[in-house]
Length: 145
Image 1 (cartoon, rainbow, N blue to C red):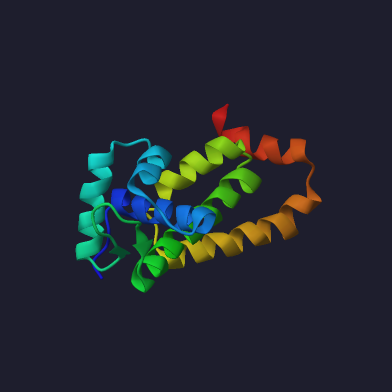
Image 2 (cartoon, rainbow, N blue to C red):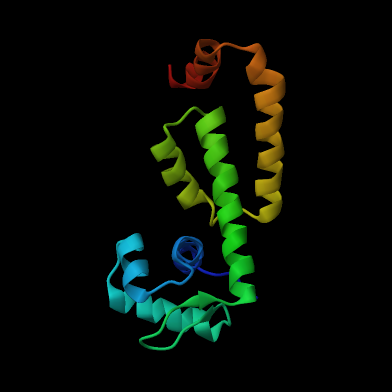
């Protein structure tokens, strides 16, 4: 499958989360969750349907196909890995970590995300546990001076 645009990946991720929460997704729920207009959602859904990633008919519930679930989960996994790194290693606020992860998740490969996951675990267990929070913050902010 061709690489999806960041916008289409966001739609898949949103549908996945709505399906987990409500078992189905609706155009108005997607629009509300993403802060976009309903016609924008409809256009994206048509595009995703053409790519075989969603089941969608006008005035019906939306669901991910097997391929859509796979693509959405791949984006979601990258998001979670990045969010953990930004929050626990770079010590960003949870809100900022999530915001940054949302932007970067579309730009990195699964392999890079997996390596970042291993780096995060290494730093958390081998480096950070041997440093105080203040000491680690000093390391992180050294370049700002």
